[in-house]
Image (cartoon, rainbow, N blue to C red; front, side, top):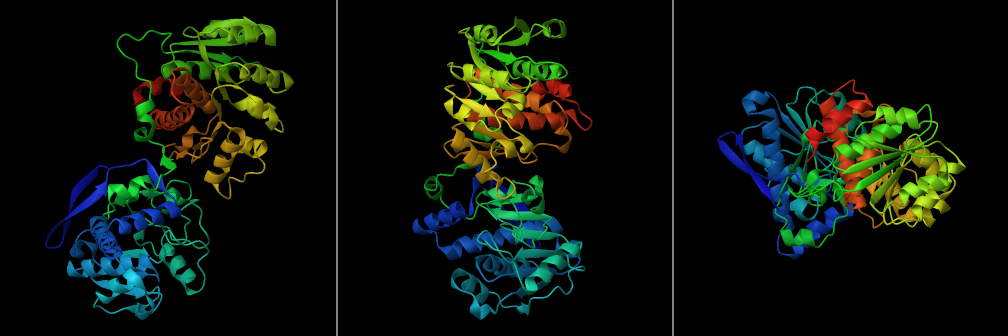
Length: 513
């Protein structure tokens, strides 16, 4: 694994802080515990892991608030009853050595602490105050070491007022591992939850750091610090992660890069089912998006009544006419066509279902979106019977709820999409502010780069076209869907506020990896 060393200035000198270069790996609570357990089995003591974690907390505090003179106030460290609290005792000791005024408050008597947390508390020689919210508004920083990834129930009692006061104080709050009260697995608050300005976590991000609202409660993408605390690489190799942040490091090795002698047929031929009025633009957007991500050829199959419009509107896409399912399948049967997109502007009803069935009986990769998904509501048996080598479904949240009523994405977004993918043996893309892509084998990717202004008509058609275009070039479905989602988000950022869907087509080439 790659680590980056940065010298952080603290009173009296500098401290070398090792941070993991941005990794696509995410850890669940179970995998985070397993990593620590394996590291200890391999000879790294729990006390040393905690010492490294606490020092990383202290250096992160110093990095955010500056020197004691610049900070201009007390650093309040809130310690809980477990190892997260132990991290706080270590951090307080280092900060005090560097000259910061410290107020350390613990939710239990230090004598009640156990294991490594007790050892850390024994090395703190300053006062341990009872838990209170005194001085929150005047503090230089509040360090949240109340609860870590192990919390699985709502915080109750006097700590509720502490959390509410910290959120209302207007003071910079640094959460340690995850904001107290946040589920590290779902990104949802379990109840009262710290709203952190930044979060420091260890070894790898946790799943809850990437899913909204957890991403925002943790400080946002740029304020989640990942620090190495000494887990050896061999420990990582034993945990087999299945959750990944959707960035190019994850799928880049599968991305189709054309060589100097590549010709258009090697880059693949993609077919899009053209639509009916008034959504003719949807299939055009999808077709052009497929070209923009590198498909060698794209054909739009248009019904006779819309053929003249589509043919006159498109110069870079071939347009072919069809008048029946038989006619469309004649186009599908061209052996050069590698992947087919059905949905954008296709129309809803039995005719679309019949087209999906027949295309799904061929050895063509298949992407189903929009009207195709709407036509399949209550028809899950059709999806199960499809024989395409790889199939991608791209529902937004409303479509997902209708297609998969048994899987509640509001309760656990990852688990819902994972179950949907497994139950249909397809790759499922649940679009939204935290777009999740799941494969039938349990792998999931989570995107964190989509701007809010992507939520405008037609952008989903661009996304499905990109995914199909990447599959046309031979990219595996899970990686193609993940790459399409990431490129979609980057194109939205590049296009800027006020974009319309067609703007994405112009900027896709600028953001390709």
